[in-house]
Amino acid sequence: MIKKNILFVFYAHVPYVPHRDTVSDIAAAPFYDLLSYSLLPFLRMCDRLDTECIPFKCVLVISPLVCEMLKSSFCCDQYVAYIDRHIAFAQEKLTQDLSPAQKELTILHRDRLLRNRDDFIGLYQKDILKQINKFAAKQKFELMATSATPCFFPFYQDMPESLAAQMEFGLSSFRETFEMVPAGFWFPAMGYSAGLDRLVKSYGIDYTILESQSFLFADHPPARGVFSAAVTESGLSVLGKDTGACADVEQAVGGFYTNPHYLDTARDIGFELDEQGLSALFNVEQGRRATGFCYCSRNGEKYDVSVGKAQAERDAERFIANRSAVLEEAASFLDGESLCSVCILPLTFFGKIWFEGMYWLESVLRKIAAMQDMECTLPTEYLKKVRRIQSIEPFYASHLPSGYADELLNSANDWMFPCIQKAVERMIDLAERFPNDQGLKERTLNMAAKEVLLAQSMDWPLMVDAQISPEYAAEQYRDHIAAFTAVYESLGAGSIGTEQLIKREKEYPIFKEMNYRFFAK
Image 1 (tube, rainbow, N blue to C red):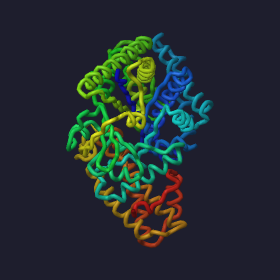
Image 2: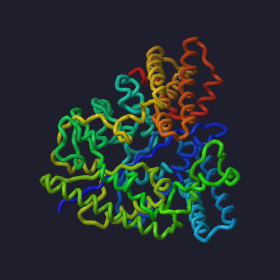
Image 3: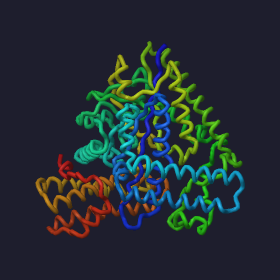
Image 4: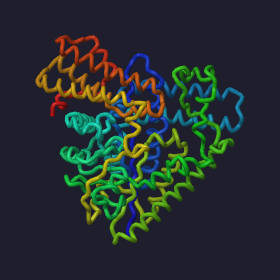
């Protein structure tokens, strides 16, 4: 019997947290949530499976910005303070007049916070990346490299120097962080356009993963669709996302996470309590956000933890049955070829949006490990199994909801791109004008390059488009453009503001080994 392959890809990215004396709640909350709801529970799950000798494999994409924050003592100390505030808040809640169900859920959340604190400080010594490297060495994880910041590559194809800089700094960060050579490269938002394969392949990358329409709308659609690998003209292997697998889990209508028995994470007390009730956690005037304290299921009734876990178990069985049926049907038409279903999910989806998501994932991995005709695989392993590989020219696409880039360039945020484009042109000019400078001028040019890379991040236009803290996103974007412009003008005038440079270096201590000259390539 043909062995069916499941390939899980989890990507983790949140906007960078400036290292300022007063850290904005809006700026820091996504990073804290990534640790509390996603990374720490995910590693706990992996530890359990590994201890019990249950085989599991998955692909991880951790953005360089997240890696830099995980290595930053400032961000780690801020996270510990965040946990302590939430633990104290939970203890205070338990002294109030709560119903038995509310008390049980408050204790559950407090205990999870305590485990996060114990693991982060005690078990991992504030070094999560070391644990990730451990699993990668055991070949449980395959780590894909990605660009320095989440830049939408198709927008900058007419500026190859800019894309070269994104690649160089992304790969440099990967080599500094992880104890392996990357075989795969992740395009942010899976944004791909014809010709980008040549750029990636020139850096020694073997494969990438693309959105399904990049495969299916290719010049010669592959005979095996997204269920097998293909290759581009440059020799870059490409795998296609199984849209059905992802839709089973995260589709807004009918996805597993919408089941009425699951915890309604949208009904968080962070959106319901008054300003006084939340003052111990954050300033409501800066915007409300989730706290993790939720008490209702999606059907409006009191949430029952055991019912939620049981539903996660059933959904794990449904997921495996659906993938098995799809792969069996595809195999019946494809003459015995080894087939693969690529399921791609944001790590932030688990816990924060789908509270029971980690229960579901662990159940899926346990059940697949017990099967004879299905297994979890890694891209490099699967590519060795493919006997016949078709050459294609993938189509322009992304995994944004529109399938292309409507969310990045519309009436709400189209004022951003011309400024970024001009800044990139000026950065290329600076790199060509000052090819051999050292000392203070080199530091200044590196800071200018940093500002351009951060301004290219998709975080800002996406936040403005989705109306998620749009004022903050616009402010951050303008801050990076203004900082770059100040450097550009100071270099033209022949004087550099040393105090301002030192201040920015403290606020953005990322990519310490910056080399602005990459913008001249």
